Image (tube, rainbow, N blue to C red):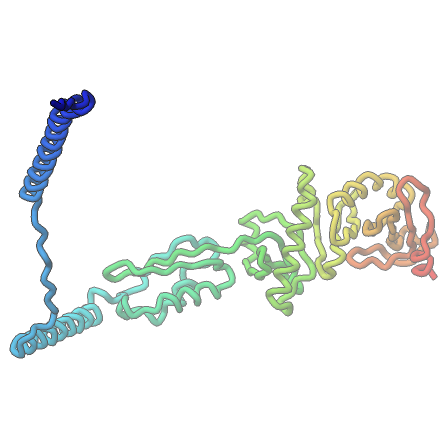
Amino acid sequence: MEQFYRPAAAASVRAKMPQETASQRSAARKLAEQANGDSEEREEDAFLRARRRVPVRRGLIPTSRAGRIAMAASVVFAIGTLLVLGIAIRNFLRDDPRFRIAASSSIQIMGNSQVTRSELLSVFGSDLGRNIFFIPLGERRAALQELPWVDHATVMRLLPDQLRVAIVERTPIAFVRHGNTIGLVDAHGVLLHLPPAAMVAKHYSFPVVSGISTKDPLPVRAARMRLYQRFINDLDSGGGKVSSQLSEVDLSDPEDVWALLPAQGSDIQVHFGDSDFLARYRSYQQHLPEWRQQYPHLASVDMRYENQVVLDMAQPTASESGQDGGAVSQHHGEPSSAKHASHTAGKPATKSPKAGRAQG
């Protein structure tokens, strides 16, 4: 009789299968529970979330014929109403007497000291009795700035019936000679007139500038006044206020600025060239006592050369001519010198070739 025996390994495998099945079941159950929970949460969120409303776009123009006619009539009525209202406001502002300049007292003027009120009011002579809204402010402002003393002007309306004029006047920086009269000039080369009494009352203390004429165009005068300001500022940069000692400054030649400086009761004409004004002035002051001792009739000093100074002597006076054998009287401006000398700083004065030619 045959006997059959099952292997022990098969029995063990069969014993383990129920356990693995149970673990798989528990894992599947957990996955199902999680899926059910997620689905419930999604349903709850979907329930709580507000649904979006889909906007319905509608055109501005009605689709029906009656609606389009009504809309066109409304637009025409609105435009007509605005036009009528605008015309009514314009007529009111134009014709109402409360907006008219009744008298010159309705024009306020501020900032004038040299320009008289009558000069400024002459610009607004045609505006008396005119409506304030029809006065061309830009033209009046331009006319005010054409006055010599006015540098800048502002004109504004003050409702209902007044104008306010504010001006900034020009500031003179030097005297200028007009023939036999003395006037003023500002930094831009604009020539200014002031009565002598008013000029004395202002206590102006400026050098007299030559080389500025009414015949010169304004850009030329402006360029020369810029040179003048550079000359003055350079001399005063040393802190000595040298410009207060100048009696006259000539700007006729932009490459040779010369000035009259006082020296022991007389004026000496000093040529400074077009640069290094302060350095040349200090060199002139340093050597002036020596030159005055050697040349008592010193009238002009040319400081334009680096290592050489040209000295011009004035002709002796009539009283001195009998003693020194000289000829004519002394004068300033463009001195006709009877004697020239070339002097190098630190060395005795010797005659230069230029001086020799001048003498010969």
